[in-house]
Length: 175
Image (cartoon, rainbow, N blue to C red; front, side, top):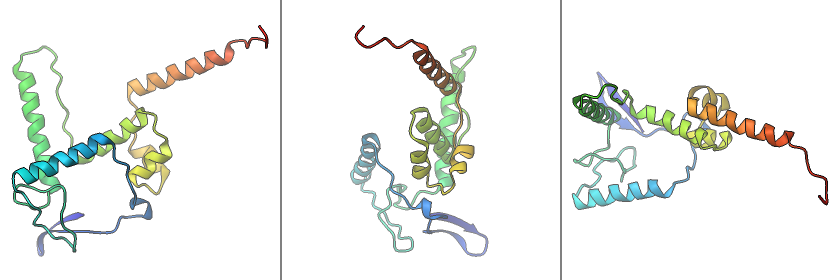
C-alpha cells in the first residue's frame, strides 16, 4: 500500500504490486507476532473499531486508527517521535550522570533492526533475503545488515573455538 500526497489530486492510498517478483513472499509468523495481532483485534473489537477503508478493492486492514481508517506511516512516525521524546525526558529528569537515551528512528528503521537481529541470531542469509523480499542478495548484505560490536566479538569467539578444536590431536581409536 502506497500513500500519495499530491497537490492536485489530494491525499490517497493505492495498493500496488511489489517492485520485484521477490517482493511477493510468505513470511513465517512466530507466536509472539500472532499474539500481538490477536491483541490488536481484541482491542478493536472491545472499542468497537471497524475498518472503514476500502482501497483498490481491499478492506479489513489490521492497522487502523480509532476512526477505522488505515494508519498513515507519517502518523506512526509522529507517535514514535513522541514516545522517544517522553522516554528521553523521563531519563533526563532522573538527573543521572550518563542517562541512556533512545535515538531518533522511524518505522523503516525497525526493518533495519529486524534484519540485524536476524543476522545476530544466525539466520541463514538467503532466508533473510527472502523474508525481506530482495531480488538482489547485495541489497540485503550492503544496506540492511549492520554489524554490531557484540556480533563481531561473538563471531570471532566462535572462530577461535573452531580453530582450537581443529588443533587438538585426535585420539587414536581404542584409547
